[in-house]
Every structure is written in structure tokens, then in C-alpha cells.
Length: 436
Image (cartoon, rainbow, N blue to C red; front, side):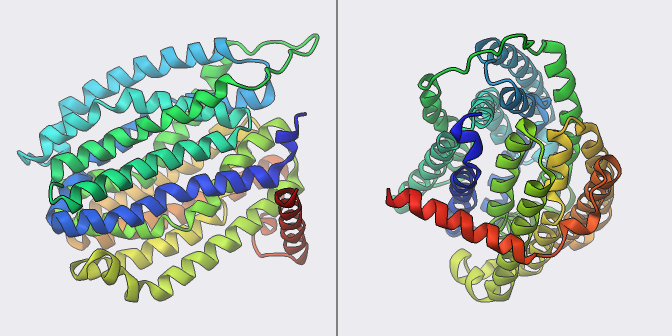
């Protein structure tokens, strides 16, 4: 195996930095949007872009995850695999784009300003899907620095352009939607680095994965991805029709805050998926799970304890009303992080369908709560639905790993002294490498 595959601590660090850019950019841009547009304007922007972000995950059909897993297991596969993936994603993207255009009046709740913006944002669906494919190729090759650069370009472009427009007093809802929709595509420039680097040679006697295997794995992942999207994105798409744009404006700010701790768990998740697909290791997976869970809980707790002070200062006094939803979502982040790597393990080891079952059950519970609670409780109702859904998904994933791989569910919870020692050794290795 290559050195990149073994240097897991460096990969996690690179992924951690990359995953930090989106939420930090959201925190930096959220005050700009909130103060320039107000609660109603911020809600209108979220209402226009939420269908695009929802569709981006729905239209992948699990192809990026399948590409990452295939390249991690069979690194000699490249051009042919990418070509097939491009064809699948482009076709699916065009179909879903047409569906977005047709359903724009629903997502925009008939608002004459929001509905055309939903259509405008949907034009970026296919390019966004192709960038997701490039990211999957980089992940499968363990090129995490490229992923970090891509996310930095996307986040930096968004922040700089929005700040410039706001300072010139030119930022309005239409320009905000355009910036948020286009900026993810600009990060594709980072993947020019994929053209460099030696290609792995095919081992003698090895078989090249067939398209059917790619589609089969992707379909099983996608089934769960749809449920996962419903669990994490459907709320933002439905709050406007169910409760109004103002409640969505409050909820988006709460989500921005609650996404900060996900930087840790998402970085470990991304690297662990590729690493475990290449070489399954129960001990390594459990150590990573416990460490990331503990860090997520600590960061979530720190944010919850201080948010009453800094949220009104950062976002504006009128967003103090977002605090109840913010606290509930931070609890959901901490709860969901406890079993995040269990779901990744199921997918990496060839059983994405089991993870999908957990997500489907959680999505059904979440959607039911959304419909019941959002009309009366608004943003808080959506947050409660997310909290319950995260608990259900996390718990079921841990139980599925127990049934399939015989791993004691208690192994996922609580930090051990040996886990701390692993962290210390990893930090020492990284420090020694940086000093060279």
C-alpha cells in the first residue's frame, strides 16, 4: 500500500481542515446575510437554495461513494470508472433539474420572488454533481489535500464575494442565491492536481470491477443517502411551506452553529470510509469513533454554554429567537456523533443496505415529526425532529454493526486511556513530520 494510505493521521488532519471551511464560512457569511437581508430576506435565500442542496444529494444515486470505495480497493482503476460515473450523474442531474423547475412553486410557497430563484439555483445541479465526483476520486486516491483546497476555494469565494457585495451595499436576495449556488462549482479547480501523480499498476490476476458492481453498490448507498438527506436537509426545504420564511431564517442560523462540531466527525468519517474499505480494522475504527465522538460532545457543549452571549452579537439581536432551536440542534449533533462511524463501517465493508435501513427508519420518524411540529413550533419543531432522528439513526447503526460484525455496542461509547495515548502519538508524529 502507498504511504498516503498508511498516513491516516495526516489524512484526518487534512480532512479536518477541509471540513472546517464550510461551517466556518457559514459562520462568517451568516452575519453578512443576516444583517444585509434581515430575517425575511435570509429566509428567502435559504428557501431558494435548500431545494438545490437537497437535490444535490438525491441525484448522486450513491455514485460518488461507490467511486471512492472502488478506487480505495482497486487503485489501478481510473479513467473508465470516471467516464461511467460522469454519464450516470449527468443523466440523473438533468432529470432532477427538470423536477426542481416543475416543483419550484411548492418549495417557494408561491412567493413571486423565491420561485424564480429556485429555478435559477437549479441550473447549478449538474456542475455541482460533477464536482462531487471529482471529490470522490480524490478521496479514493487518498488525496485529501486536494479536497481541502477545493473546500477552501469554495468557502473563500463565498465569503469574499458576499462581503464585497455587502460592503458596497449591493447585496440582495438574488445575488446571494447566485453566489451560494455557483461557489461550490468554482472549487473544481483544485482537482487539476489529480492529473499529476503516478498511477497504480494493476496486480497480476486482479479483475477490474464491472459497471454493474458500481451501480449495485451505489444504489444501496443511495437508498440510505436519500433517507439521510431527508433526515438532514428536508427540514430546510419544508419549513417555508409549513411555517414561513421567517422561521426558516431562524432555523438556518441554528443549523450554522450546530454544524461546527460536525467538522470533527465528518473528517474522521471521510477518511475512515476510504481506509476501512481498503483494509478493515475493528480496533482502528473503534478508537477513531470514540475520539471523534468525545471531541464532538466537548465542542457541542462549549458552544451551547456560550451561544447565548455570542449568537446575538454575531448574527444580530433579532436572531436571539434562534437560540432554542440552536440548543436542540447542538444536542442532536452530539447524539448523532456517537454512532456516526458505525454507519460508515457498514458501508465500507460492503453492507450499505444495512446502514440504509437505519437511515430510512430515522427519516420516517423525522419527517413525521416535521409535519406534526413545524406548523406550531416552527424552527424548534424542526430541531426536535432532527434530534429524535439522529438518535434513532445512530443507535440503529451501532446495533447493525453488532449483529453483522459482532462488535460490542458498548465499544463505541466512552473514551479510554488507550485512545488518549493514540492521540498523543499521532500528534507527536505530525509534529515531527512538520519539523522535518
